[in-house]
Image 1: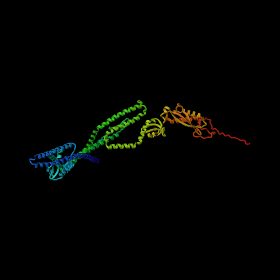
Image 2 (image 1 turned 30 degrees about the vertical axis):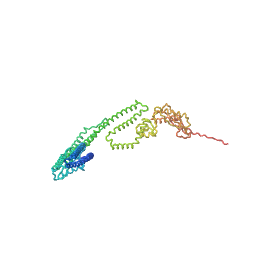
Image 3 (image 1 turned 180 degrees about the vertical axis):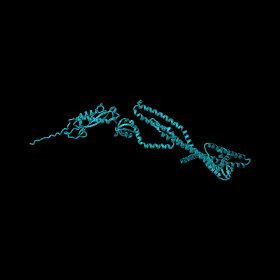
Length: 622
């Protein structure tokens, strides 16, 4: 069933090839018809002039015969006019011959077909109202009617001379007429051409009678059966050989096939190699089937006369595309060379530009006002523009670049890109702006909106932050550009970053003691700078307490969480050691008789909460 399906597919493919060939032939025929029509219109004008000259010539000859012998002046005038007509006739024939010679290499005639679909000769000129293609078709139909005559006598086909033509006739039927123009196309006389055409028609009819005899038909059917049998035998042989080859490979695969690997990575396992080999063998088998069928079908078509043209069409089905590809490649070589030259020149120019920007990035080449960290982003932009310029130069040399379909697809893709990538382009533009604004760099601790983290990646589209909780957050560059960015790291290494925290202490504690305790706690904290020295600001005097803001300098902007935690611990320790209560939030108590809020381990071992003091006043009433 698979083989039958393949055969049907080949037949359908050949039919599609016939349709493609027919469409090309129709196009060529339309061009050829236009050329011949223009020529035949001019020939019709010349023929009309010839007809007028022939009528005038007959009149002049009649007048010449009627003249008396003594009328010499009139006679000379008539002879002069006759000579002029003869000169015009010679000029007319020379003009027709010159025009035919100019068209002989380009114009193609219309074939007259025999019964076996063989081409007998070509018709180039019109005759009366009939165009060349109509003449060729009518002559072919008359020949076919002759063949259908059961009492046909081929030798009765003769040619006779008429007034302005030579006719090929059979009995009382005119098969075709040969004009002066037909003879000029073949560069022969009308009688010689008529004899040649007559012999061609006779030979075609005799051969058709022989080819269509019962004996010939049976022989051709036998040949078809033999060809099909040989083809089927070859298919069976290939099928059996394929099975034996598979068994042989399966037997020796463990010895032949090994894993294809490099170090710890396996590119192809033995099983994968086996599957690839089986796939290639399968493809090769079907390729051989295709070749056999492709050879067999033209052979079968060539056995019968009526189908011989099908064999040629099937061969052209393969050869024409292959020839077209080779021709197109050969004609495209100059454009390909131009593209190669443009690519090589632009490639090495981009390398030169890259070298310059690399020198800027490494600090070897310095430009006023141009920072080193701008080098590679700027190089990326310049490289993109250079590649775009290279594509603009190459575009006219691309095959089909001037076709409306190619241009329409290009416009359609451009519209899709512009409509579907507006947000992406906005992020890219924002990424470029951020690059040249230099608000942060990779590794900086920054805050964008309510997100704080270290910059781990900068791209044209997004910026990625790693938060103190080890979360990776992706932020579009357009959002960064439209908001505020706080950079904790940019100036920390040189001038230090100020961290601050606020505590509230009651009014009963002297502010100088609080300041000293806060500063001592800060100096005990790891990573807090001793110079510049920490300082305290009193930010408010509230109803129940005073707000003290401790400010410290640090250089490690990425360790703010741990610094704050250690600083708060030290504040608690120092305050508790010095007996200072941190009454925040509000702490309400009646102090007499209540324990202090300081943790027990900071209090003396013999500490006891004081008792309530009750004071009474006695009044003596007299």
